[in-house]
Length: 216
Image (cartoon, rainbow, N blue to C red; front, side):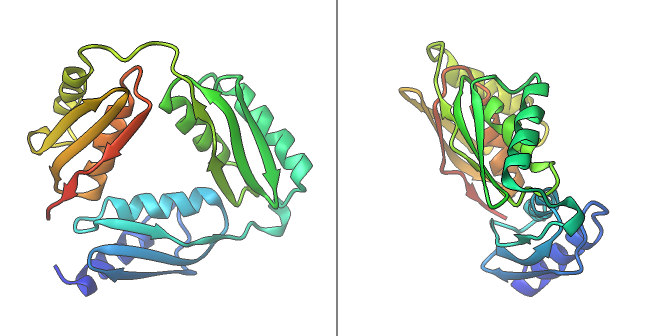
């Protein structure tokens, strides 16, 4: 597939997503890597556009340079926005009380600690859906409360094999202390990212190094 053909597929994926206003979004493709530029009205739209691109066959990487420009009616000062962010985090059962937030120029920085990667991810997900948030930096530290399981390698392999969105036959798993190293090949960027999510789901994991190559 040529970069021109891939660009058309990328543009179609964004255009036909009803959750994204694609009018001010432009894409560029070089060697399978997609760069998104332009403006969107919310962080949710920015991340949704990125997700659309990640699921296009032939895409090997995404640079998301979209700028979030909230509508004037959705704008808040930083103090008010921080209060709303903290309330949203508290009301979500998947976010531990050890996670805090700071806000500067409508950009949210998450701090504190979490025991699981999915808790860090959930905090980002909660904030990303909020109006007037322009971006999120995740500085939440992983503090492991239980040791890595002795059979964690097999557990990750089993999880990959159960996942219908991952072809586990081409993926290798190695354990180095509390770090999981993924290798081998995947047929898409979405599959590569899905494999990393499966590795993060194992207790005791503090880092996932994703060396999976994409082979179209």
